[in-house]
Image (tube, rainbow, N blue to C red; front, side, top):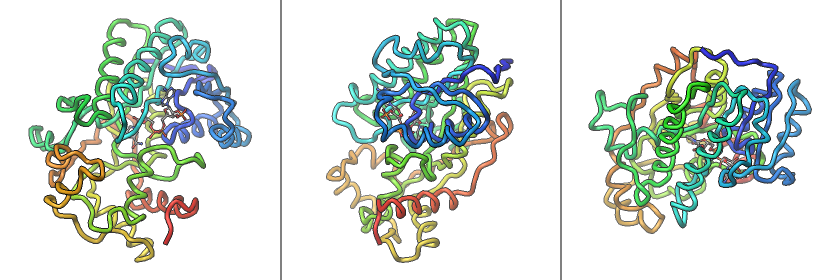
Length: 351
Ligand code: NAP
């Protein structure tokens, strides 16, 4: 049971990111002092909107300079903190060099943060942002599981540097975190495993891969049809709430799947069509698997990924988060529509 002193500063890595933005807002609105180690505190494009949030909230925001790959760079920001949220990790589905761009920063970053935690006597709890990607690699993997559903007990065993490298980076980073936690007794680890995060970002800059996926439904990329692909969805504001609860619920323990809904890409397209009509070229049918198999590699989707995912159902069991963290999830329609509305407002998509 870890009681966190609410007067102590709280550290959030990746504060400039999509997911962390809402967490920082929640902490500031609740009067916390937030220590935000970021790559470039002088980049006003990345900090201005956070400064605005801080100015109108009872909490205080302090920046520090740090990089996941620079050892020791988080030490200063962590001083005096009892709670550390580690959200920073590169999230990209297409990269040039998976080892350099995804896997090294994810694993070495986690190691670097937790080495700093080991050196900082005040820290009692670390909340790590992992992903459901650390639980399964491809939808086909779920066929082997009881009820064909992921739970907190399962691990991704099928991803590698060459196949689903982002999922591999999340799996290896979370495993490293558990290994380091097991080597000591002072701090505990609570892991948040969100599915695909949706909903409006706080930042005016489009950062996360999440934006690209929804944008493609409305910008004509999928006009030939939506892939027959099922995923889990969760609202970004609910993910922030889950982090907050994981940090301050003394009984929180282990991993938590944070996923509101299981959905197909075509169902998401239907939610958008119901709200925006025919103003945008939302797909109205599924693209046949053989066609996707033929053209997929041209769009950067390897055939192995297509054959192991398309047509297989996805299910995630979110009951532990409801019971243990008191989660309640927004309707998927609300997240998807709010998300697309923001893209229209920012002229990321045009009718
Ligand atoms: P994002 O907007 O791209 O945010 C990533 C954050 O990580 C940014 O603040 C970025 O800083 C920081 N970062 C990346 N490389 C770094 C480095 N070398 N040193 C320091 N900071 C670095 O993506 P996101 O969607 O919010 O993702 C946040 C976390 O949620 C990640 O751990 C991701 O794996 C996890 N997650 C996301 C989803 C989703 O659907 N979005 C689902 C499950 C889990 P800069 O601003 O300097 O680039």
